[in-house]
Length: 172
Image (cartoon, rainbow, N blue to C red):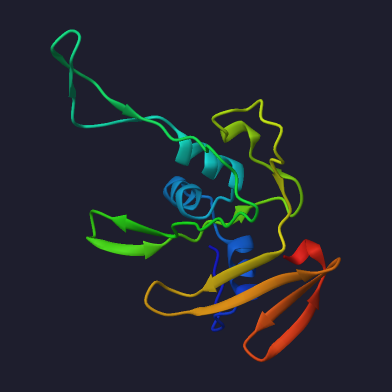
């Protein structure tokens, strides 16, 4: 039997809980895979850009028949500054409620290359981005707290209300 009791709600305690989370039972393992297994920003982009079969068929003018339709996305032009906003809330249809996704999204702090998702992959424009700021929400959908992380020169900082702390890049 595994028991871990924590009365704190900070991120360090959550990390300790997830580290010791019992994954012996198959149902617990499946739930952990869905809700907690880390994913990469690249896999998020792949999922977002994936071709999607639409429910409605459209009328094909040349053959005058209804045909399946797909929707696909591509980046036509890259911005000077890239802002990525993750949809962190998912609808649990069986329970008819929204919950916050607890998945950790891994991303490179340097050289995030978006060439793969460009419509024109042969472009000569800069396709790599370096991260210099993050806004992170801790808490539930209806409440919580934001903490900002920003890089000044080569040094990362944490901004949490009135506190500013120096960080090592590995903890960002």
